[in-house]
Image (cartoon, rainbow, N blue to C red; front, side, top):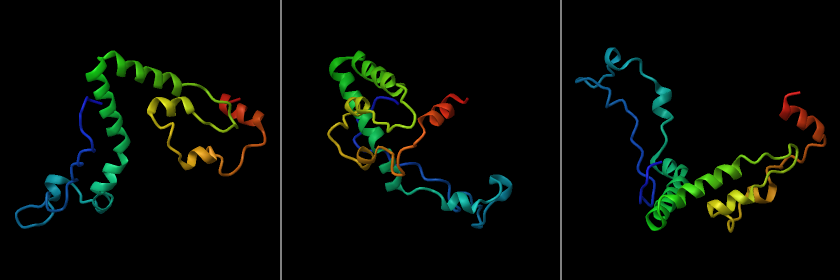
Length: 139
């Protein structure tokens, strides 16, 4: 992640289309570009979908860059270190996992999402904590 003052994610480079790999007659050049893959041509993501997928990353990069410009290099480094410590905190298996500490460090503590209500327990809690511990510890 390089420092950037970009507000919105950049436009993703377009994947090579049939016209980019065509010879002078407009046909796909198999000898130069290999076999044509219809799956690769149809699975390319649109520009808006790509931007929405990278929206939070871009906003976080902007916040860290502004923090670096205001307070120095130590401020974003400390924040990233605190995030890493909070993420590596082990949870009890079989129980709902809520990482309010990470939400506070990311600035998402005032946002309400479906995961906050259900805690990833849409199917109900596991009734056997012992079997969950054995799965986690590979016993």
